[in-house]
Amino acid sequence: KYNLPFEKLYGLFQLAVVEKDKNNFPVAEQYASRAIAIGEKLNTSDELMEMYDTMSVIKEKRGKPAEALLYKNKYVALHDSMMNAQIQTNIHHLNIQYHSAQKDKKIAEQNLSIEKNKAAIERKNMWIFIFLGGIIALIAILILSIRSYRHKQNLHRQSLLTLQKQHEVNTLK
Figure (tube, helix red, strand yellow):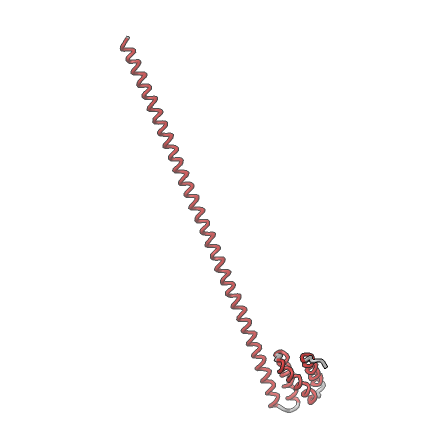
């Protein structure tokens, strides 16, 4: 009535396991064969792997070593395939992590370079301000020196003029 292939697969496989544990291998083989047929149609790798392994045990117990070997080989092939897929997935994830770490490292290096450049610019700016401050101080000292020199010259001229006038006054007397 209902089309529930996964539930049918699990039910048949569980019945096969129960019959195998009861050493009723012919019935277990029938259930396992039906479950395997459904699993192969649905392509359920995990379940098929278990069913192939169980079927190889059933076939061995029934005295069918060639068929047992066939199912064991199917189990091994599927197991290897799944492991290879998992390994490839792991390699892919590790590659992503590696590239992400490389990018993070590059970003960190760039940030460090930026910070070093900022520090160098700040040092240069400080030296420029010190240099400009020194130049301004020298200009101020020069201006003050010139004003002082001129003031002294004016005072000296006035002194000379005063002396000259006194001398003239003295000579006129």
